[in-house]
Image (tube, rainbow, N blue to C red; front, side):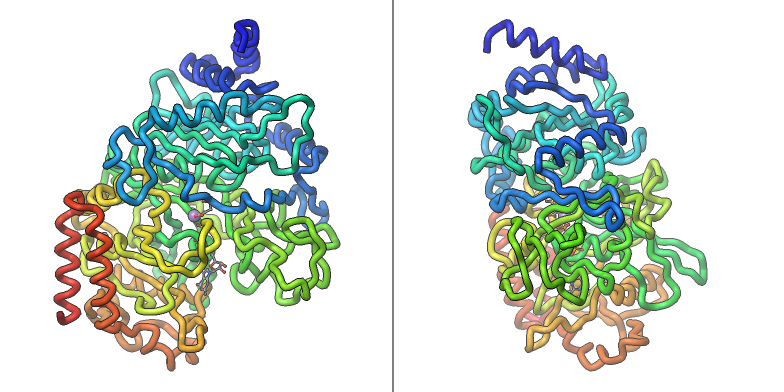
Length: 611
Ligand code: GTP
Ligand code: SPV
Ligand code: MN
């Protein structure tokens, strides 16, 4: 680029900037010089700004406004058919030392990755607007809160970031000279040169989702989708934040967060749960109990940050401000709270469009519409023989629209945790619920979770894979070190540590049918969990943990489940011993970084299984 153009880009940044923080200005200037946008917009997070961006996108054909009476303030976006999920094989952790990324991450040295990326980013925003999106993860000023900026050329990403984070001027003002903040850069990788026409969903066949934990940076290229493009989410709040947490003594987790109140005693509890992608976090976070005695309120559905508080307990926040939830399977009968939340102000991505200008997806209603426009924009009827909505289609909606939102979401410094759940999608072997014997046993359970793959990541749905702590795609450093960090946290918390449980809503019978009704009825499991925390239930010890004693699990109203209960809780020593062998193989890849405590837990498990 000529010096004249460089000078004009510097001017453009200075003229448009809404901060005088020199560090921020310098970084934005560097990125602008590299990517060469036509214009720059510093986002203030206002309603005006939202209105302007949505109007422009509707005009350009990249957003479809929904009927104002049916779904006010809401829009449908259709992605490129090949840009529909996170791309785990294009996701990289670029730590200086390969061993720090660990065997479960793709690694490239930072300098090598920069050399690969910079030519791609060079001029990648030509013909486009570069948006500077400041955001806060957690309440500005909170004890667990962190700040960041996303630079992006995707207005779709900007709109989603406004819903998903506390985005705008307040966050930018919070970034003071010398303070810690995370720098994230995103480009769809589709420059508009020589008057080229834009497409409705620009993206590039070449994709890179790269993380530089040593310098707290994310560089994402080529995708407009969810976790690839909303860099506050998986890239920052999990991959980068997990490293920050390791260094600073806290935890960044793929967990929902909820509040339970015992309506008889008035006592409240807080619980978090780690389930892999598309395995029920949003649903559990919005749980409507089917048994009396409990009020459940939502704090978060995807990410929780955990940090010991002054009183020695473990405190948690939901750093996000919205839900990016799976649409299919969300309906009146499964998740009425979500359905109510989605009344308006929602961006839908890759769902179907009805003839009345509303949205539809599989499982939304019992009756299937006779005609729809499917997620790719084609006519659809029930005879079409393909889903109308993409299996990983999503809604983006402000958390404050949730009727079940707990006041605790606003708590500056988070809420104290009483219990932590680990789960996955397991058709066999794993019982409905089992309490871990100790913190270390709980860490072992979390570390060895496997789950059937879902549509949330590219690849084969249904295949069983290890997904420790539901963090396999999200841990920004060596997984064995991460387990070590959890073990240390337990030592620090001691008696104050939350209790740990393994759950599985997905066990199937011989005919492939789910044996446990799930959804609202999961309140029965939560009821048992809290009564264990309170020491009200004695439970029965098994080789894999404590399960409910006969009569402890409240089945009033679903007595038909009684006949399957033995199968729902069956623990077959032979299959568990076979899994223990697989665990040993799995652990082996971590070499001497594997914490000794986990080997000890594996030995103890085999012992209890009667080897
Ligand atoms: P991510 O946003 O990808 O992290 O997913 P998530 O963990 O929030 O998953 P979500 O709650 O959106 O659920 C994903 C799918 O699991 C949906 O199709 C739900 O209908 C289904 N599901 C959730 N809870 C249950 C349950 O208790 N039983 C059964 N059988 N299915 C469930
Ligand atoms: C997940 O896949 O776990 C999600 C969706 O929550 S994404 O934001 O794409 O990561
Ligand atoms: Mn998730």
